Length: 222
Image (cartoon, rainbow, N blue to C red; front, side):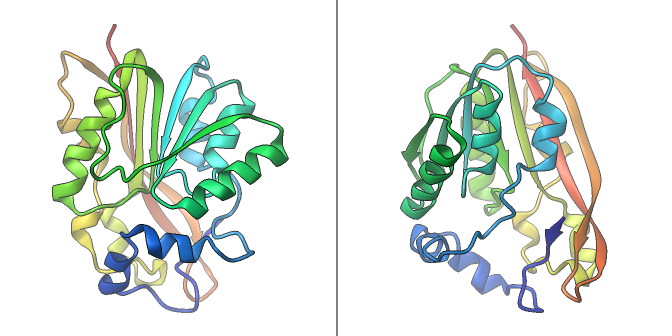
């Protein structure tokens, strides 16, 4: 179960924006403890478990739990993150799991992945200001091969209504699945899911609280 932002308080908007730079994540991943749970994101498991493995791009890959889960199921995974320490952790976790993962250091805010080559492009909780996020989603969509899948998951703006979740006051960095779906040309994309899904979290007070994931899953038409 996901915890809130820890230390009994939510991050401020200023702290969140400071975390948009690689140096902040190098510092965060530089310790000995896991930053995240070590388990794959539940919406990835829900949407991808039955898909036929192929080439997968995991962007904002963090410590690599999603990448390792995919690789264990036969996906040829390229994990991308702008933090060198994140990539080090991914390599370590891949070695522990006995799987191969290709890592690439890139800032996805400006990086353009190769077009039309991935059967899956996975983006989990990679929040950016709206003016950065919309063109980023367009570039990620372009990377999907015909009959391939785009999965974009993030915190829904509804979470701002529940203080105990501890989301910082950065509404411009949250999104709905419908907003992402609206970016995709319906002649090119089939929307598999565009939903708001509740998920049990641990709040800032240590008690269970319901959060909401925005889940966009689309398949590129052949």
